Amino acid sequence: MQHTRAPAPGAFLEKRVPTPAVEDYLKAIYKASRGDGAASTSAVADALGVSAASVSGMLRRLSERGLIEYERYYGARLTGDGRAAALDTIRRHRILESFLVEVLGYSWDSVHEEAERLEHAASEELVDRMAAALGDPEEDPHGAPIPGTGVEFRERAWPALAELGVGERGVVRRVPDESPEALRYLGELGLRPGARVTVIDRAPMDGPITVRVGVTERVLGRELCGFVRVERAGAGARGEVEHV
Amino acid sequence: MQHTRAPAPGAFLEKRVPTPAVEDYLKAIYKASRGDGAASTSAVADALGVSAASVSGMLRRLSERGLIEYERYYGARLTGDGRAAALDTIRRHRILESFLVEVLGYSWDSVHEEAERLEHAASEELVDRMAAALGDPEEDPHGAPIPGTGVEFRERAWPALAELGVGERGVVRRVPDESPEALRYLGELGLRPGARVTVIDRAPMDGPITVRVGVTERVLGRELCGFVRVERAGAGARGEVEHV
DNA sequence: GCCGATTATTAGGATAGACTAAGTTTCAGT
DNA sequence: ACTGAAACTTAGTCTATCCTAATAATCGGC
Image (cartoon, rainbow over all chains, first blue to last red; front, side):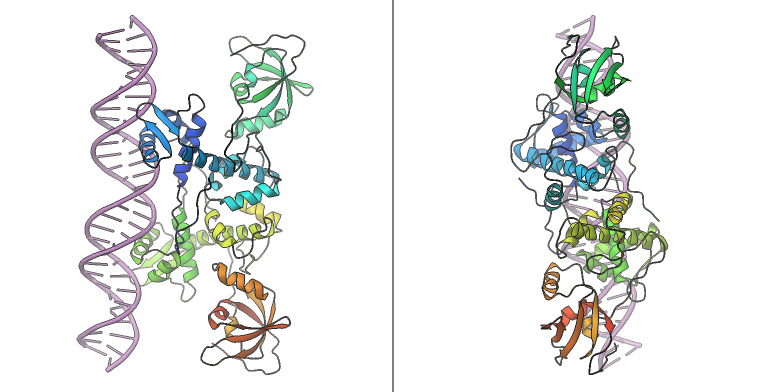
């Protein structure tokens, strides 16, 4: 489902059909829906940096527009239309990020903010041309999959690096895109999608985790390791495996 | 003068410091100021496709912000700050247009609309990277000069093709960028910046003008010839020259 | 120098989106 | 089952921008 971003006959100050705010809310609901499919008011408020009251108001409007199902005091669930609109925006965002990195030489820690603004202004045509120029990539620079124009789309739920047991090995699949600071650090460590990593040690009491990347060992905070998503690879010598 | 497009600490739904509407008004005032330096309310209203009443209101607000000098029933004149902001937006617009054409293969008749939206979302950094990728062009695809970061900037007032007398020759310097229809037609005729053109005949009563482009002769409406700006080249056989 | 036409402004209202403050609902722990 | 904290909604404002309708200023012709 493509969204019309054009009309306004003769007018240059156009009203976008889904406004930037609506697009941001739908994205936030999509991302906050990782559990039972519903996003709570506060989760959306936190993600967008607005007050819960503002979210309540917007959820009612989104519901009236048929973009979400909204049950008071419970949460919001995207409808088919809402999900399509969210994925549309996410596609724009991720292709923009890829283009900024690959073609314009942005660092992977600085693209998010730029894409966050451009995604509301870029047409489907622009995004498609950028995608074509990149060879229709399937992932953005942070390892996030890029929705296509088709209907089916699912984001794999890779385990976090923090979930690997001592001795386990993995391949980095995805890193968070929103924190420039975390990304700069991960970049320095070489923890990019595709990097192989081995858990050497886990300090008790949710303490830091020691990993080997390439030939060097690093001690990483547990929180950071919760953000880095990995695919389990063949376990190492000691086969202790934790489950969560 | 660069404008901050970023902040909003922690908030993703950011308020741009100059809003898109403000940027559009300043651009419109800049473009409508071609005479005595003042833009009339109705000229701005026409350019933006909004009512005159809306313009009156906005002019008052722009004046309060120090971006224009506004005298009721007379018109608006950009201040230094206002002009800088307008040129900033125009720079973004023209570099975006250039990039879309040169790098992403857009046709010159379709870039205006896309750039019109992107110019409000693109950061200085993005625009500078695009400019660098293009070798810091001095003109956009329609022949419009691209403001630099420096202070001095003037757009040359080339004569219109319609002002050339029979026998006069010229080089196309600039075409309008807003009308896809006109641009498609001009493109077909080969009337792009740099093209050499000779006026073969001018029908009386403001009738059509016959020009030669390359080896072919074309009959063009007077209105279109008023939009195409040329630089006079050495006159042809008959030296009749008109002044305006 | 008046008068109608044009142009511009004010007045009043709408919408989208955000906020704070106050009230309501849910939920967890006793 | 009660009760207080946390989560959520409602109520009432605010700002920005648009609109239409009504009013006011200017200007070109006679």
